Length: 393
Ligand SMILES: Nc1ncnc2c1ncn2[C@@H]1O[C@H](COP(=O)(O)OP(=O)(O)OP(=O)(O)O)[C@@H](O)[C@H]1O
Ligand SMILES: [Mg+2]
Image (cartoon, rainbow, N blue to C red):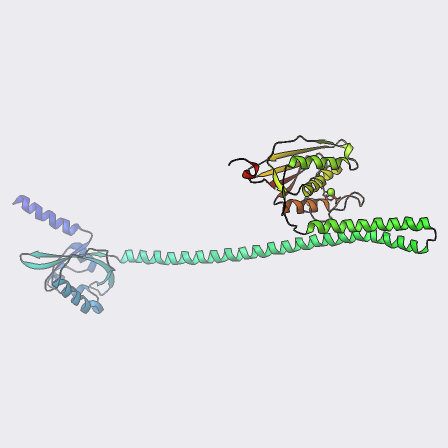
């Protein structure tokens, strides 16, 4: 029938057009059909394969094993899909071996058991997979190598930072030692000179005067040492109070007003409602005093110093801004070093900001200096927890 013929033709066309090789093998393992794709794949003509044992397509080393598998499959034939297992070896007519994936489907044709095998050549796929695997390995090697390089760079960076810290520390110790030398040697020489004069003095009033001078110089040395040691130690922060920084600023301004040249400047400030901070009022006052006195000394005549308080999320800032000459860039990292001072011996020891920083950091705070028109010192203190302030969060 035309339709039946057309159907058979269509089926034949479809089978031959399939890009997969199709092979039909009978119960005895003989090839009874092969489509065009399979013939192309194994490089055979159809009549060379028909009637041949399927093992002609299997590499010689696998022939025995294949036969056993085939017999086992013949005894319990169950369909096996492709791609679920590893690939198998296959051999072309000229002996060249290649990889295939095989799907098996048992069937019966006119009462005889047959197996339809669908075969695809996976050589190219395997090659790509292999290339991908090698590429993957290469990538892993590259990552490992880069990680190692990064680790080494990080280690080098840490070494450089460590060296920098060491040299900064050494420089700070140098400043400290020369400062101590300077601050202590000067009064020491005075004491020595006065004591020598005392040895030769006969007049009682002279002796008293020399004695008084010696005591003064000794007090100066003692003051320097006390200043240094009092703030150099980490100091316990037990027994802190809840402090309103407005009171601290007010008291510090009052003290500054008692120092010389403070009447030449205008100190502008108004109380601001800010959170309280835990701390030691006397120390906080000393810190603020030092910063404000520096501002007074820097601004000179007609100077204006503005002091502001500002509450941030969990902290309170105190800003002290003057309209003085500012601090040269190269000095900014040194101003907190002990004994760093650009003032004359009667105006500054160079301990003021060193002490400020000790106090601020033992209060868990932070101090920053910025220069624009004049200088601004910002001291930031952690605020007391909200519950301590009687607020609900
Ligand atoms: N507001 C400011 N404007 C310009 N320079 C400043 C200011 N504050 C500090 N400095 C610079 O920082 C240096 C160190 O200040 P610090 O308060 O530590 O010491 P000092 O004022 O020189 O001496 P001391 O405070 O011990 O009497 C000052 O000598 C000065 O050069
Ligand atoms: Mg000072």
